Amino acid sequence: MNSSKKYFAEGLGTFALVLFGCGAAVIAGVTGAGPSGVGLLGISLAFGLAVVAMAYTIGPISGCHINPAISIAMMVAGKLSAKDTFGYVIAQCIGAVAGAGILYLLATGSAGFSMGEWALGSNGWGTGYGGAYSMQAALIAEFVFTFLFLMVIFGTTAKNASPQMAGLAIGICLVLIHLVAIPITGTSVNPARSLGPALFSGGMALSQLWLFIVAPIAGGICAALARKIFIDD
Image (cartoon, rainbow, N blue to C red; front, side):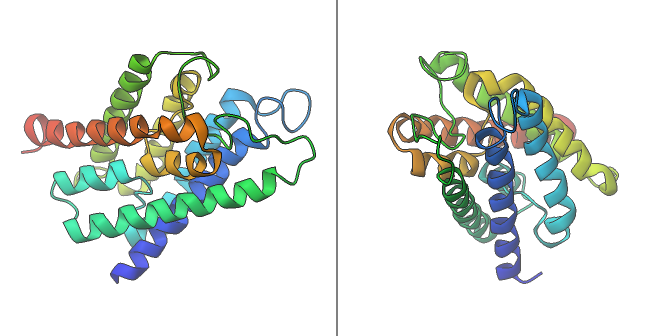
């Protein structure tokens, strides 16, 4: 497949992930769409189902990474070239920023919307965010859940796995991750997903962005190495 087509697909997929997932949190979240909103389960499903939809839409084109941590882990595992890894990551970041931009335009159309700290579904930790978890808890959560996420991805996309079920399994895994991690960090496991909202939100979201770049990438790399050492022949 032509590289430009793969990069476009990655940008489009990440755009959709941010718009659907963060959009569910911002527009239809706990207080949106009526008295109760979609809540934690609804937001978790939005992120997971976005991945499922994109997996079957752009998977045949680019593999549907839509996440720099996945692309970098695939490079470490020898499944993606350095050139394509760079192209994927750039495209994913552009798509995430574009998705957050569209979400900003939609959210600011509401008379009651206010751009407070950690706006537009930004990730974060500490006093004033979610369950006010510590930086240590946020770091551990993002590392461990990205590690597990990549282990599922490597397992479901292995040569002896069923390719038709990979997108569904990966999406379900992401739902499970969100169900646990939303109160801790809002759930990133994806540097691009964190980058887009943080750029528009600024403030604390932008100052804490480093954790949502470092921890998911480290977790993904460790998963690639663990897969190589302990599982692959």
